[in-house]
Length: 266
Length: 320
Ligand SMILES: Nc1ncnc2c1ncn2[C@@H]1O[C@H](COP(=O)(O)OP(=O)(O)O)[C@@H](O)[C@H]1O
Ligand SMILES: [Mg+2]
Image (cartoon, rainbow over all chains, first blue to last red; front, side):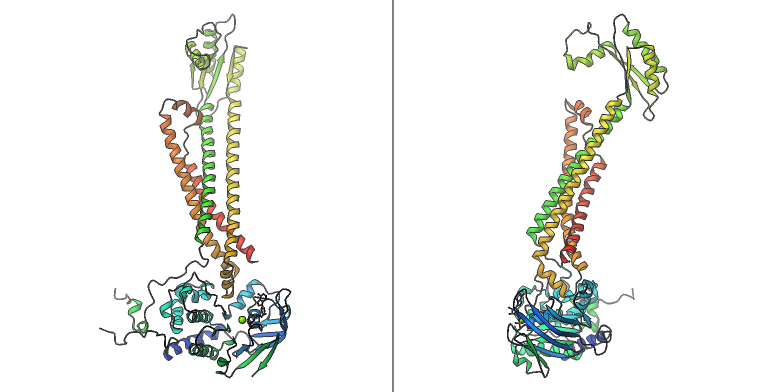
C-alpha cells in the first residue's frame, strides 16, 4: 500500500532543475545561512572585488590585460564578455588569486592581495565559488564526493553535510548520478556538478567561466536562472561568457574585454 | 523500548524525497591511488624493512649469544698447574686445590685428572698418542657463585706465593673484555645499518612523494581552489603514504619474523644432530628471544612512521 504522501517525485531530464517547492526549500536554507557568513561581516558597501590599473602578461608574452580597473559591488550580477582569447579567464584567475598581476592592485573582500599569506589566501578562497571552463572535477571521486569537496576540505564531518549535498544534487538534477565518476557524465551533467560544487559552501562571490558553453540553450537558460536566484539571495555573481543570446536574457552590467582593455556597458 | 525512534527513512518529514542511497560512496581518498607506483613503493619499503629487520635480528643473536657465553665463562675461573722438573705435580695440584677451596666465595673446585687433561689435548694432537712423557699441565676448574664475583686478586697472590712459577689463575678477564667489545661492535654495526636502511626508506619516500605531487598537480590545484589549506593537502598525501608504509613495513617485518623463526627451528634441529653441541657452544642457542622479535616489529612500525613523516614534510616543502 502506498503512503498517503505518495511516491517521491523522480527528477526527470525535462525538469531537472527541480520543482518550485525544492527551489524554495533550498533558497530558504541558503538565505538563512548567508546571514552569518556573508555580507554583514565584510562591511556594508565595500566592493567584493576591486582592480586598479591592473596589467597582466604571461611570462614574456604580450600584455593580455592592460590598465584594467573595475569594482564588483556586493549582491551584484554582471557578465564578463569579449571574444575568445580576450582575457576573460585570465581576469577570473586574477580574482581567484591563482595568478598575480604584473602591475596594478587587486583587492578581494577588501584585502589587497599582493604578498598575502597562504592562510589568508585559503580564507579568501573559502568565500568564493568557482565554475571552471573545463569543470575541473576530480575524476577519481564520485559526483557526490566532488560536490561535497568544499565542505570536506573544511574538515566538517561527513554526516553534517550529507543531506545538504544530496539535496543540492537532486535540485540540479543529478540525484540519480551521485555514484557516477565524472568521466561517465555527459558535458551538461559535468557542468551541473561543477556548478553544484561552486554553490555548496554558499559563497559570497561566484565566478563562472563559460558555464553554459557545453549545454543546449534551454539548459543554459535554466542554469542562468539558477545563478540569478543565487544572486537574489545575496551572492555577487560574475559570469564570463561570449554567448550574447544568453546575456540578452538578463538586464545586467556587462564588462567587455577587447584588446586588453575593459569597457563597462550597462 | 518505547523511546526507540523509527528509522529515518520512515519518518514522514523525510519520506517526501527518496532516502539517501545506502551504498553512497563517501570520503574516498582525496589523492588518487596510482596502483603501479604505490605497489612499487610498498615493495621498496618492504624490502628495506626486511633487510633492516634481518640485520637487527642478526645483531640481536650475536649480542645475546655473546651475553650467554660471557655469562658461562664469567662463572668459571681455572687454575693451571704446570709440571716442572723436580716437583711432584700431584702434590702441587692438591695444594692449589686446597688453597682455592679455602678461599671465600669459591663454590666448587674440580680437578681434571691426568687422563682428562690429556683428553682435552686430543683435538690438537690426535688420539692414540702416548702423552705420558709430555709435560701436560693440569687444570682445576673453580665454580664461582652466580651473583657475586669473589676477590680473585687475593686468591691469585696466595697461589703465586705458595706455588711460585707453577700455579697461575686464569679469570678470562681479557677474553671477557674482547667478547664485550665484539658484542658492542656488532650491536653498533646493527644500529648503523638499520639507521642507513631507514634513511634509504625516507629518501625513497621523498622521491615517491614528489612524483605523486607532480602527477597530481591538477588535484592539488583543485583542492586549493575549493578552499583546502596546505596542512589539509599534506595530510591527504601523508595518510596515503602512511598506509603504503604500513603495508610495506608489515610485509617486510613479517617476512623477517618468518625467516628468523625458520632459522631458529633449523638451528634446533641442527643442534640435536651430531655436531650440535659444538655449534651451540660456538653460536649460543642461535635463537632470537622475544626482544629480537620486538625489535623486528618495532622496525616495521618505525618504517611506516618515517614514511608518513617524510611524505608530510616533502608535501609541505613542495607546496611552499
Ligand atoms: N597559461 C598561459 N600561458 C601563456 N599564455 C596564456 C596562458 N593562458 C592564457 N594565455 C593567453 O592569454 C590570452 C588570454 O587568454 P584567456 O584569458 O584564456 O582568454 P579567454 O578566456 O577570454 O578566451 C590568450 O592569448 C592566451 O593565449
Ligand atoms: Mg576562457
